[in-house]
Image (cartoon, rainbow, N blue to C red; front, side):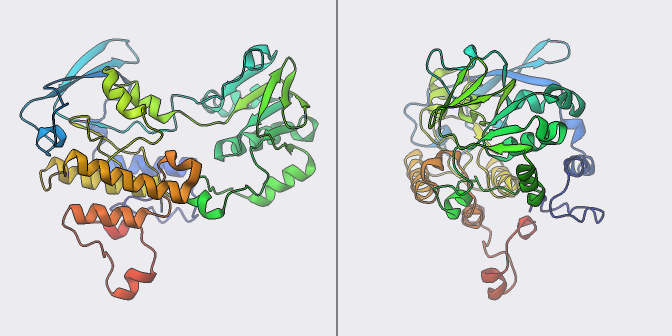
Length: 390
């Protein structure tokens, strides 16, 4: 599923779940094949962006016209070169934010005064800091240490297995999942909210648990004390030298902070789920699109469809409906996500709804959403990126 529609994987990659290096090689090959590298400014950090244009308050249409390029309006982007620390301002007609939501702004739970990491005599870090370490440095960081991992998602389990590999049962890694191995919500809700995950070599993971290299301790809530963490449910003390928060990221804040206007920032972070028409356009922020903020079983699958739609909008192949109609459409998607994802609907996951989403994309662009040949194939064969190749 993780494949561009117009660039198949090389025959040398046969595993359904490629390694990190194979994925990196694939992305580099794609960029080289389509000559994208010369158009990328590496070592650049956008410090902020400000809008210079007419007031948007009275608009009934996005940008005042429903089109991507209105008669007035520019964005000024302040960009820092991370190698020289020099800054430069770029003035542009349109901005597409591809920031992602799982990076840069870590989410760490809040604790009452005197119960947080400040009372802990060891080190408490977010998984972002651990993941930034080279493999050898990460191994040295946890070697011989009592490690507690907070979180039971992909990152948390990866870190736990790395700690177990380095330390073995002599210094077991304790994982604090919020739920038991069987969560209180359904498999369907797990899938639609994007919480379902693939665990490579699951037998090895449970063997590691069985031998005592990984310990699982259900912990809906906990606090810190001088020598570790205190499980609230039964007041169990778990000693630790290192506590690693694998608790995710604050994606909305990351997008909000790039806007110098507090009004635009509030439009991003002011609701539980970032409201984007077609999971891309903020109706009340002019000349801006956000791609990659919604995910699916394969985020590349969703993002490529969104990019194709975005190109059509930029080329003027279609106009957007009124702001009111876009708000109504966003509300319909919100309602659907609340029904299938429950409390996790704010994650903006399209898992299980990719075909529905792609149908809307195709209709907007005047394309037939039935992408396969024959009724039987359309109804019963799985859809993938290659079905949407032009």
